[in-house]
Length: 631
Image (tube, rainbow, N blue to C red; front, side):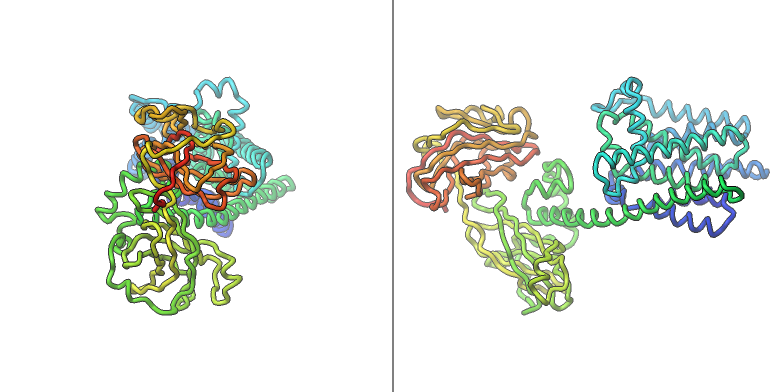
């Protein structure tokens, strides 16, 4: 983005003679180009090409302009000309719209009377890049058919206008006003582009720098047209994506630098146009500043969700919701985490982040009364081999530094590290009730693995390997266990058929599980794809004892599958039972609260995981003969 800004301002400096105007508009241009409304481009490595293509095009037009100016002065220009050719090559292979830059050099060469040799060389280079780019070219599957835009010109034009006006979306306008404002603002951009093109074609004697700015404007317009060609059927919301703010920002800054040096203050018309232009520039600056504030807040929230995912990885807890903050496919993360851990990469680079399962010697050196805080809650995510995966929350304040505690770890009763947590979460309630706390972001969230009904302690990590005790908690008892199908007793009567939603269907289990080996119906969430999610509601029913069971089979991952027991009359949650991995049909026995035995209940089976192997299937509800309690 710095390259884009430098290229535009270098061209602008050739046109603007007033130093004060130049510096003022340069500052406004920098604010627009670096607006955090495009924060995803700054924070997500995948988006780097959206900067690269615009930067390569802008720098190419600047280099080509310098080569023309040097030629007119009789100086050697081959170096800048070759640099321009290299830059359009970079743009072509950075993003699909980059190929437009090579073709825009052709009208630049003609308009600037670059000479026959330069024109032919520019045409030849553009054709060569086209041939190499489209060799073995494959259209992207699932995008809009290219002919759709020809048969639907108004939606196409609307998408292009919305794309060019997407800067106004950061104003927080409600629909349909947001879409209408973006289309209107983008339409103004289209009209300004046509006016600039008409002016340059009419005079045919423009300054090279102004032609270069027009080329950049047309480059972004062409980008909008290409994007609309492949995405017009996706809806206008897609045109408002933050990644498209990058080229659009360059579009408007280039317009500012194109028109500002042409201002006239000698007559009423000139003054009026200057005032209108100043109002538009002020509006663009306001959008940029609003984007900065909004993007900063969104980035802060994203940092918290990233930190939560980090702590899930460090704690060895598979939490699908946390993982999605990093990558949409959880099994990709699971596949790469062992390599990162073994090679001390990414979140495992810090030695203090590799303490899981260890008993560090310095952990005993706690500072008394250094921290105040609380271990508020611990909830079960899943259970496997007698070990619980848990999510924990609380708050912590370092009285020594008068700051929130930012890193915490959990240990079991023997001092073994069993998990990690991160601070910085909003807890305004603490500040209102605890006088010593001076911040609203003293909350923490974390993950740990521990045995059922065991003591875990939360420590705040302080500089110099010092720690402070924040609180302690007893982990939940494991209120579910796998039992043989033979232990299932009589069927529990259910007053109505199961209510299915999402991916649930009768006999919807994966073929690898096989049919349920009991004379009853089975229902599964797979139904043809791991990505299916949804829920099945069974009931109302009445349990005559505190333990019930049902046949169960799961895919390789049961971390995001859960059974929830509800009061049939009020809908209040009575119990939650994370499912246990069972690749073959077996029984799952759960503990029903004694207080609700004999009352009407509903059992809801929820598949909340769309990743590979995340599905399960169940049969009917059964009584269980009382014997030893669930451990």
